[in-house]
Every structure is written in C-alpha cells, then in structure tokens.
Image (tube, rainbow, N blue to C red):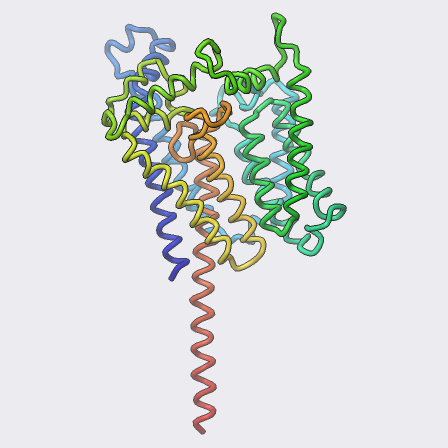
Length: 408
C-alpha cells in the first residue's frame, strides 16, 4: 500500500509542477516574448499580431512532446535500459565530443553546450548525459557489489569512469551541468555501498583540479579565457557590495522574492518581468514565482521538491533489484539537487550556475529528459508494488494449499 501511495503522490507532484510551469511562463515571459518577436519580425508585425506568447507556446509544445516520452519510459521494462545502458552512454559521450570538436555547437550564455543546426530544434546533450550516466553507473555498480567499498577496485575505477563526462562538460565549460552530474554520481556511489571517506577525498581533489584552470585563466585582456565566467560568478557571490556587476541577476532575484512578501502580487502581477530579471522564464523563474505567489504559497513549491526527494528514496528502498535501486537513487538525486541549487542561487546561497528549476523552467531538453527520467522512476515504483502484490497472492495460495493437505 505504501508503494502505491508513493506512486500516485509522485505522479501528482510531477505533473502539478509541469502545470505550474505552464501557468507561470504564461505570466512572466510576456515582456521577453514581445521583445524577442520585435527583434525578429519588427515592431510593425507586433502591432497586428499577438507577440506576447512566444515562450508559452514553445513551452506548451515541449510539454505535449513530453507526454509520449513520459509514457514510453513509464511502460518500457527496466531490463531494456539495463541492456542498452552502455550504448546509450557511449552515444552521449560521442555527442559531447562532436559538440566540442565541430561547428555544430551553439554558444548560449557562456558555454558551448547546445547542438545548433539550422533545420533542427536546439538540443542540449548534457541533459541526455545525465540519464545515460545514471543507467550505465547503475549497471556497473550492480556488478561491483563486493568491490565497491575498496579503493583500488571500487573508487579508482569509478573515478576513471567519470573522467570522460566530467572533462567534456568542463571544457564547454558548463559548470552547472558538471555539478549536477558529479552530485548524481556521488549519491549513486554512496547508495551502492561506497566508502563515504573516499567520496569526500575524491571531491576535495576534484575541487582542487577544477580550481586550477580558473585561477590560471587570463581574465584581464580583450579576449578573456572561457573559464573566466566561473571566477566572476564566485567573486560576485563572495562580494557583498552592490558595486559587483556579477551580482545584478541575484540582486533582481532578491528584489522579486522580497516584493512577493506574504501573499504575493498575484498571477500576472510581477513587476520584475518587465526586463528587470534576466532569464526570467528559465534560470530565475523561482524568483518571479515567489513574487507572484508570496511566501505562504511558494513554500508549497519548496515542499513539493522535498516530498519528491522523500518519495524517490522510498521507491529506491523498495525497489525489486539493486539495479533499480541505483537508478531510482540517481534520478531522485538529479531532481532534488538541481531544484535546490536553482532555488539557492536565486536566494544568493550559492554562486550562479545557470541550471533550471525542474519541470517549471522553460527549456525543451531539460523538460523532456526530466519527464523521461520521471517515467522510469514511476515504472520502478509501479513494478515494486506489482511484484509485492504478486508475491502476496502466491503466499496466500501456498498457505491455503498447505492447510488443505493437513486437513486430510
């Protein structure tokens, strides 16, 4: 019964957040949609056409595309993903290599993280890497059950396995996705029985290695190195003064959150949406939502992600197999970590990362991969209580048969 409760609660939470995202994007993206359409088609076009709903219709299209993706993951046997985990992982790594080595990579913000081909929709391969890595790590850790706690046969092979995706994300550079991928891997390693001290030591060494190119980057010339933006974000986070240019986005986010006060300004009442809050439909949508809903209602959004975390790990605990447990742990870590880092950035509790709020933010690649991962998580939940019910019926039949024999 507990597994069924987790399944239905998780289903409602996921699609409730998707609907909230549509609702909020319809409100907060009006000005940005108009500005973009004027840039593309000219002001005269917008005098006779509605130019306020560009992001809304695009996001609605992503949601509609996400429904069959979600259903595919929900009803596909988990053994299929286990069987093809390695090919999916290798394809994901290959796409990241092609992205860096060719001209198909499109710059967005500070990273070369998008496949930008004129006749195809833009795709962010790092989102595909997250689910591909979860599947393959689950297969690998399932086989390493006895050796996972050792340094030489557990932790070191794990580090070698993580070098390709982490290095490729660092070279883009995509600091946000790198953090999410590393966090997913660490949680899965711990869930598999890995040594916590190995994780702490490995994390410390990784931080030193990542810091070296940032510290050595030349950020003073006319052409600053591509790692300079990470340094600027860290400096902006540590600098509490208003003079730091890197603080502009966070300052506007805090103004939005504070303006919402207790009960909010109401849907459509956001003032920060009129060009003040950068990336309002994606990275900073939590701030705009807090402005419109207020503290009493935004706390339910925070609680929704906390409950998803609890339900996800409950599903992992009750999974039928070690592989399913590891996949459920990885997916739950992905959703939870990404959500709370996004909210922490808005509240200036963490440096700016550029990662979206799961299910709510605008972004096709993020939404589709998250809905796919959610379908897999719900499939694991559904399989566990179906298996539980089947086992109970078998126990009942065995008990009845035994009792019948004894009566004679």
